[in-house]
Structure formats: C-alpha cells, structure tokens
Image (cartoon, rainbow over all chains, first blue to last red; front, side, top):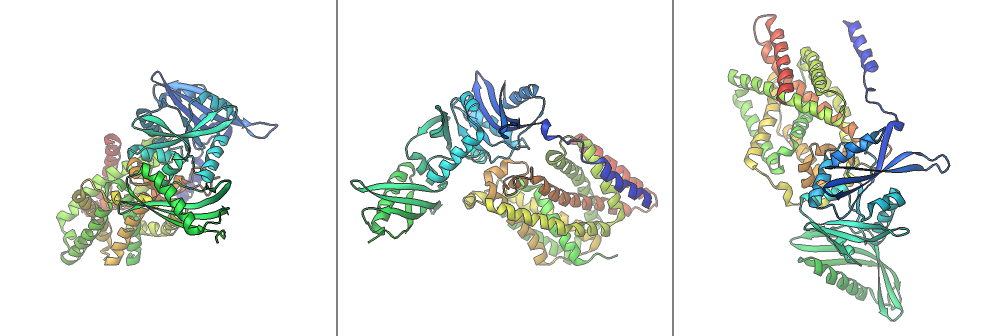
Length: 299
Length: 285
C-alpha cells in the first residue's frame, strides 16, 4: 500500500501542470485596442508587442485590424491572422470613437467582464481617428499623456474599464478624455457621454466634473488680483462627498505666489466663490466648501 | 480519536466563509445579520431538545447533503474551470474531485478535520495577505445605503440561516460539538466584514455583475506587477475552502450510509451513490 502511495505522489509531480504551458514567443501580447462600428460591423485595431527591436531594445509594435458582427467575432477573425495565442493580460488602453454608443458599450462590457484574462483597470479614452492614432502613437505615450495631465491639472479624466462598467450599469454619465493626433499626440478635451450621445466639455468644465466625481488629484489655480499681479494656488488634495443631501468639498491648498499680499481669509473667499459658482451650475445640491490654506504669503 | 472543540470551531470558521462565498450574491448585509441571530437561536434550541438526532432530521440532512453534493460538485468544477483549468474538460475535473474526496472521506471524520486544520494556518495567512494588499483599493464612496438593498429580505435571511444551520449540523452530528455565541458570531462577523470589504472595493453594482467578485478584487493588486494573474493564488486559497466543505458534505453521506447494518452493503451503496452524484452533476448542469 505504501509503495502505491509513493508511486501516486511521484506521479503528481510528473504528470501535472504543463499541458497548457506556452512560450512567451507564442503569445500575441495586446497592449491597446481601438474599437469602432462601421455599417453594423465592429472594427478593432490592436497594437501587439511583437518582439524586441534589436537596435533600440524597445518592443516592436504591430498594428492589426479586424472586423466582425460583434466583438467576439472580430476577435475570432483576428485569430485567423495571427499565428500566436491572443493574450489580453497586459491590455493598457482601450480607445473608442463616436460610433460607440450605449448598445456598443454593453457589448464591450460583456466581452471584458466575461474575459478572464483582462484586468479591468486599463484606461479608456475617446479618439475619433483611431487608425491614425494607432499608426502614429504608442499606447504608452497616450497612457502617460492622460495620466500626467490628470495628476497635474485634473482637467482630464482617467476613466478605467471599472468606471465604465460601473457608470454604465448605474446609468451615470461617462467622461472620456479625447485624444487627437495633429503632428503630435494631444489631449483635445473631455467628452461627456450622456443620453446616448457625446458632448464636448471645454476649458475648465472637466475640473468641476472631476470634483463631482471625487476624482481630483492636484491642480493650479491662478487669479488676477491687480493688473499684472497674480495669486497662484496649488490644490494638493481635494475630497468631495455627500452628507445629508449636501455636497461637502474639502481642499488642501498651498499658496504659491501672493503678489497682492491678500490675507488667507480673502484668498479663501475668492477660491470658495470660484468653486461655488462653477459647481452650482452642474449640481442642484447645496455646496459646502472647506479649505485649508497653507503658505507664508500674508500680511 | 476524539475531535477537540477548538478544532471544530476553526473548521466552522473556514467552512462558513466557504459556504457564504459560494452563494455570495444571494445575501444582503441585513440578511446576514438577521440570519446569524436566527441561526444562533436554532442552534441553542437544538442543544436543548436535540431535534437533530432523530431519524427524520437525519434523513433530511442526508437528502440535503445528497442534493448539495450534486450542486456543489458542479459549482466547484466551474470555479476550477473558470479560474484555473480552462483547457481541461469539466468532466475530468469533476471526476478528479470526486475520486480524491472519496479516498479522504473513507478515512473518516477525524482525518478530514485534521486535514482542514493543518492547512487552515496557511489559508488564513494567504487570506490576510490578500486583505492587506487589496485594502489600498477601498473606496469609501462605495459605502452607501444602496448596499443594504435587498430583493427579498425574508427569503435571503432564511436562506442564510438554512445554509449556516446545515453547516452546523454537518459538524455537530459526528462530533456533538457545542458552539458558544462568540464562536458562531465570529464566523458571521467575518462573512459580513468580507462582504463589506468586497463591496467597498468594487461597489455594489460591480459585485452584482461579476460571477466571482471576491476574486476580481485581487485583480486590482498592482504592487507586485511582475507576477502575472496573481488572483490565481487567492483562487487556490478559496478552492481549498470550497473543497473542504464538499468533503464534509460527502462525509455526511457516507456516515448515514454506514448505519446500514449489513457488512459489505454500505461501501457499495456509497460507491453507487457517488457515481450517481457524478453522473447527475454532469448531466443536469
């Protein structure tokens, strides 16, 4: 009996585990996907990390296009043109254009929710000319562009697949950063997807939407106190939450420059008015703003 | 060899999490709270009048175990197939599960409890590591009154009570172990806290969408980016918990058959029933 047990134990180490083993070279690692719908067909653009460039030692990126009646079909057709297994674990970016609306978003969400390979924390952006973007830009550039702008200015949104799924099922509007390629990669503005159509958010609007969504990172706010004299503030941290039907916003602010020598109370009042005026246009809730100002620029 | 009270308690602690997770989307937090108190009352009632020891109750538990085995064999198989072995046949996975359980169950109750206890330290360690790593992704905005929304509070409460009491009976019948208020409530508190934890990370909307939301939270871990598909480690952790639950249900089946008097009959009946469970589970689902 003991011999049989030892034999079985030995078999455990010998016959298990390696059946589904795949070499890295046999994987088509997809790092970005672009999806659009033309004549009821889904067109997908994928960016593959194919292999390393021997000279620059950077990954060579190959762009492939495929189409199908739904996303699954498009991916099945894609498989026919690849001699490697599709691998979505390293997906970092999803780009959509204005042909993607509620029905299409549902299809996309279902595809990703049922796909065990993907992590739903990848960035989702809007770009009208997907083909150009895929041919001209690298996904890492787009990711960095959005991330840094989001962290430094809060004027763009960093919408992940999780946000997309959540907002879709909660029937909330969706904010997507609009990327364009005009000789260089740029953030144009933020697109708001609401009631099955896209609308542009311009200038500082995304900042206030970020406040409402509690997505503020850091940003600079400058105002002219006298001709050619500025007060420059840096919002280091902001939080927004609803308590008893009131929208409460807390800001931690550093005073960077104070050319007019205003005291903290005056600066606070100005900044509070600025937020209240703009947020009041977007929200019906009563807004309470609590600022903590730091800096030695006062009389 | 007699099983100690603490051993049964730790087993209850692990298995209650397993049975809760296998039905994760079926309960609202209120149902868990109400269900845990109701469960405690029924357990105390049993300790007084011992209604679990009569023939009707035993037969009902036997029948339930039989049905649950069919359902849980499928649940366990789809869990393994969905998360780990997508390239393997589900029939093969079911068969492997049943055969391995068969040999462990034959060894007896004490062996099962010992196996659970031996791995419990490791399971809890991995569980706590998972909690620590995912706690960075807690979003307190996800905690709102919507969490407490329930489709049918009465049904959910009774379902939770029923599952927890069934688990209790699986442990009580072979060992006659008694549980104190704290022992029972710690398990329920863990279930409730873990529910809030998962909702806090994913939000109630996403919890309702995903098949295994308690595994999806681990996909967020970004600290150790170089390990691909880190959630598999945690999936294995849960798999063991689910497997132990399955083992205990299987043992209950064997224990009741053992009471048949003729010598060779019980093992044969047990074998036939096992084959029947396997075939039904494959055919129905």
